[in-house]
Image 1 (tube, one colour):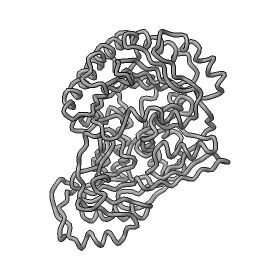
Image 2 (cartoon, one colour):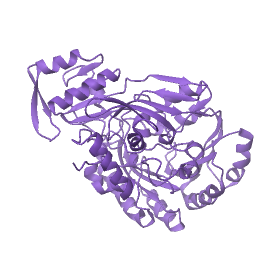
Image 3 (cartoon, helix red, strand yellow):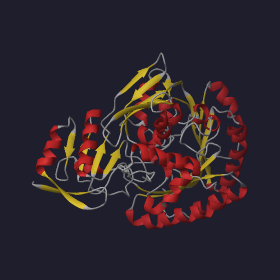
Length: 468
């Protein structure tokens, strides 16, 4: 091996000598993988099977020193850089063609302080790994809906899940972060140290640096009342109308995540996936109207550990499946919007295609609008149209189906979008990133980008473009 062809930040091809690569390897405690190395093929794969990219180098970091060394090496050689946490994001920004993939997935340190109810967590952790440790103390912080999701990307984009209505977003529960900037410095950002940067990382994604440690506020979380009620698709309109009315007066301890998909038996269905966080007896009282509604195929709502709820839906979202998503926030779940959503779900091109309507509100909406970079706190409904299949030959039809449904729902959209559900820029367009933040916050984020990453080193994300 004498030379390795690589891609620069400007998209040009150049070469790295074997001498330069080996000198880089000696600075690392973690592995440095080339395409010819054992483990490379596994390391380059991410959750979304539609993403098939081949980095020239993958550095599997074991700590902050490896991250700093990787950033410095990439800057010296002007390499295109992708940063991987959990690798779960649908857009696939965790991996690039021809550049350097900085892989944080082996950085899984976690320290829980049960007295102060805080946790210091490294970015390679998944939600399941994080929850397993915090639940040993009867504590948790709001995260997402799947245990296989990485904490890093989810938190940096906002992060909502089963506990959001009670305790806010994952990013709302950050107390501080340590991050490596584009010039290779390691900074701590908090309310008192680099507060402008701390504002930006709470919703602004990976635009300003590589977070190597997250400090979270934790909350008491015991067993929950969780699971789902499964209804035939013929009842979908009535079920969603019931949900709309029920959630409008439900306490913050209750969260519902409606979805239209396929039952294990292969039948089109509508699901009400729920979580009540609090005393089980009180939860049963709150859920009494839900238990009495309609004629479901099954009622699978039962007391369970919070970790069991977090992993309950993992099997339906396995790694390697073809995923294409389109998303928007909705103004309200009107009857006309419900009709628009339900009708196409009877003619899905694959059984894995479907619609999800995650619920916001509660504590998410009560934080001051300017407190963090996350925007659209006033909305109550998110909309995700997922064109999903196991067979790549079906992907084109699934993409077409998802796009058509997304276009049809636009009259009911706020125009805003959750940044973590955006796809690739070539498909979405740069204006969609701006829509995730709104004009005022986007201007503020650009100013932060100009300050902390003026050369656009961190560009493989839902990225904020510098103007300097």
